[in-house]
Length: 290
Image (tube, rainbow, N blue to C red):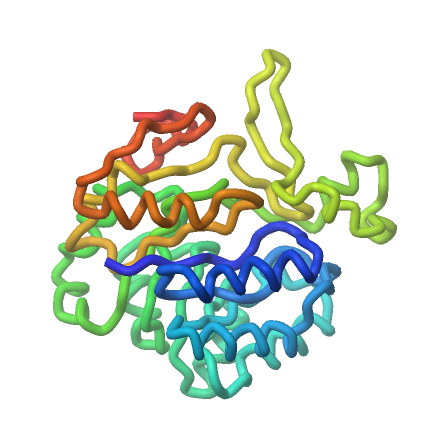
């Protein structure tokens, strides 16, 4: 079992991003995803900056993937997407079907990101035929769903052709919108947002009338209010999940990486912190902690 760092979901200053990836280079992480996946207006780092980080991380022995935008809204974003797909050096995580099409046309293998709605064996087999070499499960799928899917006969004969990756730690990306909810929360329009989401390095929380945290606003992305945490389910993933993904946090990411690695065989279980959940994987309500 390997461990990966997903792309940073939030808007952090350039210096903070660079420091985070210097820590990643010195950590025990196996795979690192780089790139802006949420909002094209977040331009603290450009593709050339990410490529510099990618070379630094590869020299440190990490496998590096470039992650593409999830929601494309302008011709300029399509041009940037093509630059990612044609980087010529690093594997690409496709987070929308436009990226998959570009990569397939060039005969380039790819990672299918969790925003792609791949829910059954027929879709998965089709994507493998298009060049998929790694599949990141949609975040709402359960362990039993994955077990049933991988046991299908039409998947068994291609099981060695792809890897399965699971987002197992971090606030879950649930939806993307043409509107920016972080800007709206400050009574700003999307076009005049003044990049206010940089003030919220862990997103902006939304609570219900009874005080329960139900969502996290992250620009045009809506995340789960509670943090997903499957640290105690790792022993049951062997044979199903090849790569366990941690989503970068504002604080404590590498401490959690150490805890995950220590418990991959069940030797160091952890009490689930208040505000963490694991319901989707256990076929419970998403906010549940089983």
